[in-house]
Image 1: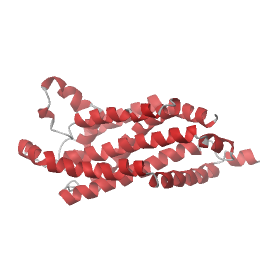
Image 2: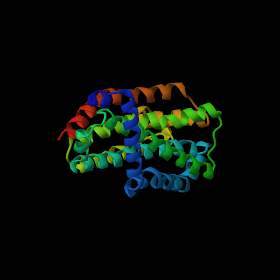
Image 3: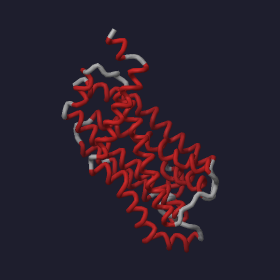
Image 4: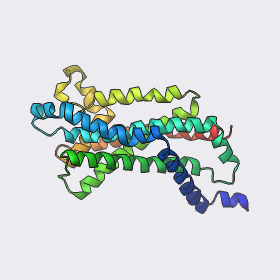
Length: 262
């Protein structure tokens, strides 16, 4: 009877909500996660607007915020996922995941709660970046529906990236490997259309920059907030995110289960 209760849909929902709350409280009390999710992205946005915003506006004739706000929102989603991955590795090493495994808890709630908590974290970080952007002059010109889709792009993009981080975190005992993913996110940021316009890059690298995951997500969010194409970059964002989930979701689930049974 107890086993049936542990595997019921009601138990999954209840246990997922409890563990989601636990993760959000843990992250809120962790200064690194708060810095990566809220403070650093907002400071980065202000810095970019002060240092390069005016130059980009002179170069293109358009407001640089419509590239930098989407880019910083995406960077916040990615960097927060790395911080969460480091904490996941610490929970595994401390035996916390194993202790949850022997409790009468729905087996899927641990991983589902992390997905839900990641989504909440990304939404909060995106809202914070947009609020700072509004203070600098950023506005939505395409209506409320486009603004809603704008906010969903970092969630989809960030959850796909979090799947990769989770797979790495549960399969390696070295936090440095998880933290090393920040090198990839930094390269994606600097070589994206959100950092500088595509024409500012050398001709030979423009196709790579234009079609890399962060650039297409930035272009989609730019179109949803100001002007520019929406369909193609949005479809490419979904394609990149879907490919990441397809490739890393199963390894992440297997690794999480293996780490929980140690």
